[in-house]
Image 1 (cartoon, rainbow, N blue to C red):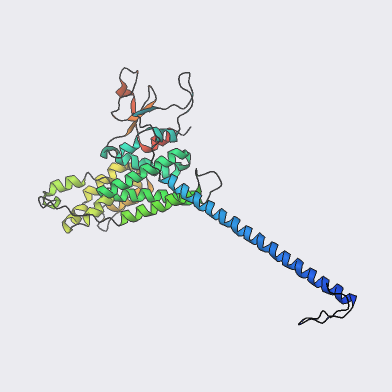
Image 2 (tube, rainbow, N blue to C red):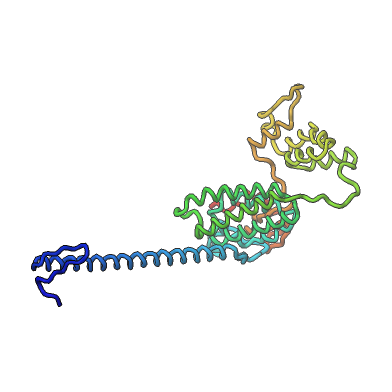
Length: 355
């Protein structure tokens, strides 16, 4: 132990051999110790914060992975029944209400898309739900919606049919989700945001797959459409209910282009979809002074909804309030059950649950 009066000078230091110098030396050493301790504490806090942030990142990553795995689950929760009871109020025999989500879960739409008579009906229903009713579905119903949609896309990719129809459906759904995701926190979507982002990425992937479809020409070299008599070709064209199909067909060959421009063909198409009053309001004359039915058709579809036609539809029995597919037997107590059934369009089906 050194004593007072000893020279404590060290390189870079000059101390006075007094008690004041010794006191100053102790203060310097004490301050250095405090500084070192403070630095050590700060370093420990920094390390703990890094560890905490790292743990949070790992938890978030695991949660996102779990959400994606849950969204990939293909478990079907609906009962796949042939009919369901629908009523807007409670009775002594029936209690509670049937919601749109419940009906979507319980009716077998997954099998219906495999039937060519019901395919367009289900696709139109999916489009209407995607446009305005997605938030009305429960979490399970929304999951079933995406599972059924995936089956529809896979069917189209395999059959190479109804490509444009499914493109429009996917675009409608993606547009709706873009709007709904921006409103997260207002209870407009059921489930974690990561799950919905993954679903949107899946929709974009499906759209890319549809855009990359290369329709293969059949190997059959027998009789083709253009080999048929002109009257038969025209008769087949008259069964197309979408003017865009006529335009596409006219781009295949010059002869078909001339046939697709037939005025009588476009006139019948306008009269099929629209009333005489609607047509009179949208008259368009050609350069020759005649009605241009083709231009009128495309103008009319921008102003009025087209007539919908389906091979098979859902039907509601007014006697027992049972909803089922056409031709499905249900426990009806009416003397003539067929006379009590009313066909429902996709929009009528949705309106049925607007209480």
